[in-house]
Length: 393
Image 1 (cartoon, one colour):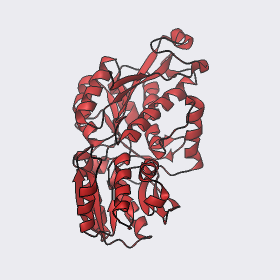
Image 2 (cartoon, one colour):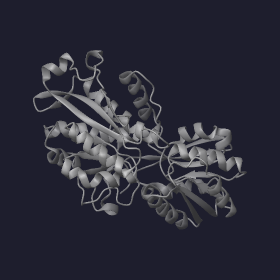
Image 3 (cartoon, one colour):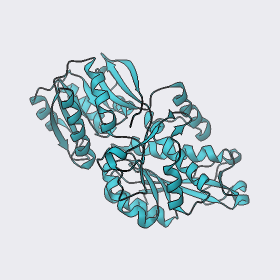
Image 4 (spheres, helix red, strand yellow):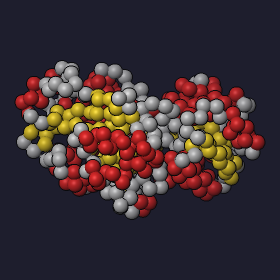
């Protein structure tokens, strides 16, 4: 079963749990809560899927360190089961069914639009709450009320990213590169509007997921002589290769990323700051002392460094809120009751601060978390900094 692996997360009495065996604390409480994590945990989008899994593990570890999650008069030990949905609709649908077979009603994930498309129609049948991180135009809808959204897409922040970039570079034209599925086309169309609203002309190129040689696409892109290139929603691993091949082909302009966090992986794959050179991007949650506490706590609780950057910071609130909703609802089985409690929880994370439930305007349903976010700039191979932008409906 290469796609399906169990991840047990336990810090009760600082004792590791062997899969399938209960700790003394669990045996006494008689309550185990399994939650799922889902996303691409292999391939170009692996950083996003593994960050989702890391967020689920950390949220579980936090409550387990307190003796378990209070549900009614019980303390429930929380474990995590991970599923690699491989950034596909079929993978996410199969994952939902596999997790349902294990009695799992709560899923942190999936990540992308193809996965969200695959899982949404079966959440009701499987009685599961899920959180997707996609930037699809239908990331959440009234038709599928058990789907929640971890944060806004480019419609919520692309304009801010572009305006910040225009302070640093003269950009009159941009070429966008993204996968040729809903996870790419939805984001590009939103990005195009944001660029045009700021007086920037756009062209776009799409590629098949799994592509490793982007030379033909880059040749077509450079033929349009753009001032900037935007990797949009290309997974971080793909974006790193695109950046590297753009620079090798002689492109010297700024490169943007109006498609989600992942700068650390892009830097690693592309070859570092000297290659990336000039870069602007949506940075996710701002890099603050409070946010960095997450990294320290992750290492304390899980015994290793978190290597997912702001991706994990952005995924963690949804995992925490899910467990809180279960506790407030007082049930691990009544999914509808938990969902109703979740919709009315205040958006106030101990590390990210106060946010809002957004999405009513775009989706017709306010089931999208929105916290302050950052816009990052790298110029001449040096990080200029990240500008903080406050959330608004």
